[in-house]
Length: 91
Image 1 (cartoon, one colour):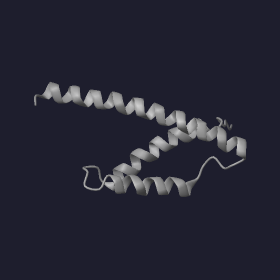
Image 2 (tube, helix red, strand yellow; image 1 turned 120 degrees about the vertical axis):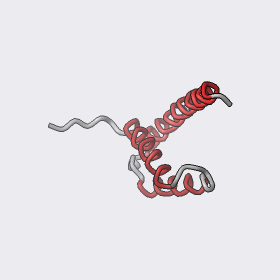
Image 3 (cartoon, one colour; image 1 turned 180 degrees about the vertical axis):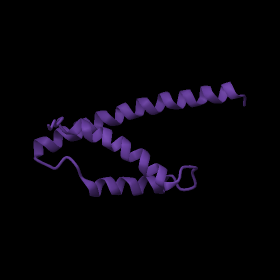
Image 4 (cartoon, helix red, strand yellow; image 1 turned 90 degrees about the horizontal axis):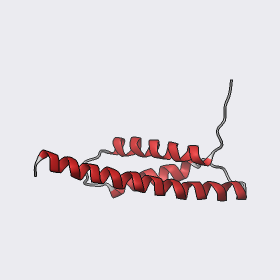
């Protein structure tokens, strides 16, 4: 495959990733509404760790090392958490 073809494939994957991340955020928003309605804590560290372990297991044999998977998903979850919580400003 040529360089430009490979780049086009990466661009197509990136487009799908963005679409899926936005879809994930829609679900996170719904979960946040349910948690607020039911008086539950927004941040659940045990759920986060369970999710990270599952993702690492699903990636077994892939090119991404565990440390990279955890870093990527911590960023994704951090962005999602910001959708669940109201903005707090301190000064």
